[in-house]
Amino acid sequence: MIPVVAGLFGLVLGSFLNVLIHRVPLRQSIVWPSSRCPNCGVQIKSFDNIPMISYLVLRGKCRNCKVRISPRYPVVEVLTGLLFALAAYKFGLSLALLSALVLICALVALAGTDLEHRLLPNRIVAPAALVGFVLSMAGDPGSWWVYAVSVLGIAGGLFALALAYPGGMVNG
Image (cartoon, rainbow, N blue to C red):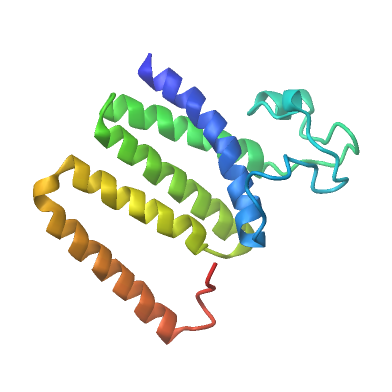
């Protein structure tokens, strides 16, 4: 039962990840305004914003202008739901599950953003890294120094890449 609930929650969170994928690289608010058709700008009604179901009912098109909606939206929702269900099956209700769900959200958002915008925004990476660090320390407080050294090593490596290829890594 836990994997089913996690999968449904993943579908809903996948819908929010689509907002991150679309808006964060454009430096737009992720909360305001509410979702709109990228073509005609009409606000999407709440009943047209139900993960997967609305896409199927509307046959992948905007209710107002009938322009095709990117298949990225249902793919991100289904992928997130499936990964959440698999993580819940593997870890059950545990701190490890919470860590896995945070990692899944970060990786799906980053993969989608990279595919669409060729960008890995710091506005996604930094909070995910911080939450991952805190959850790791909560799960194994005795190894706090391992996590601290890991964070410094990864940050140092990324900083070195940014210095070596300043045009290759866009700061988001």
